[in-house]
Image (tube, rainbow, N blue to C red; front, side, top):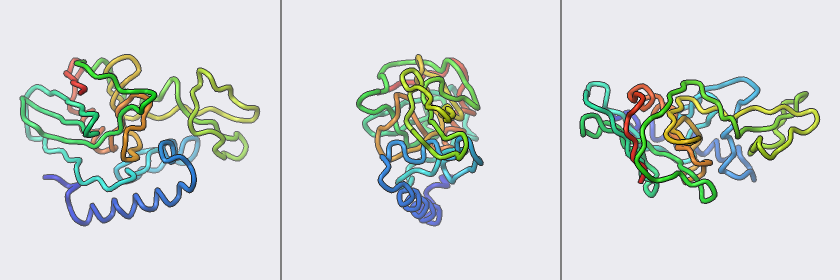
Amino acid sequence: MKPLKSPIVRWMLLLTGVIVLGACGPTDPEYSGYMAGIGGPQQAHSGGGSSHPAPAIPDDISYWDGDGTTGSPLIKINRGQQKAYFYKGGVLVGVSRISSGNEDHATPPGKYKIKEKDKDHKSTIYGVFKDKATGQMLNDNVDIRVDKIPPGAVYYPAPMPNFMRITGGVGMHTGYLPGYAASHGCIRMPHQMAEKFFENVVLGTPVIIE
């Protein structure tokens, strides 16, 4: 079964994507909405998960057919295609759209293994500044190593649900997909796909990044 290929779901995702883009205004789409909801009410968006809006473009590619399949898991990440492929016993059981590292923070190619799983992970480096009194966003692209917290502001680390660490600070996790490589090196996925990948990997699962 490939639920994301339903015409009704396609239409709903297209409508949601238009609303998200329309709400962004002049803000850089790389960051617009990525930290939505931090410090305030958390809402689950279709395909986005808590704190993450739905993809900016309709997702008629992602699917999961692996619940009834057994075999050793393997993940292949294709940065050129911006897709992740999940195999069980050599059989392709799932495909996910992704957003990998941008030009300044490239996702490193190579052969790796899952080193850590953290369902409710938060970044130790990136996040946002919000006004403590009003909750207004002051900076939605903070690197806490170099950005000092302004007076009257509070720092919120970036949420990375379903985090699967691959190497160093790089991992797969739920995140906003603007339609191109836009992350700081991690591999963002739609929420429902990140959940399926998270549930079906174990420590030591091979990951090939091409």
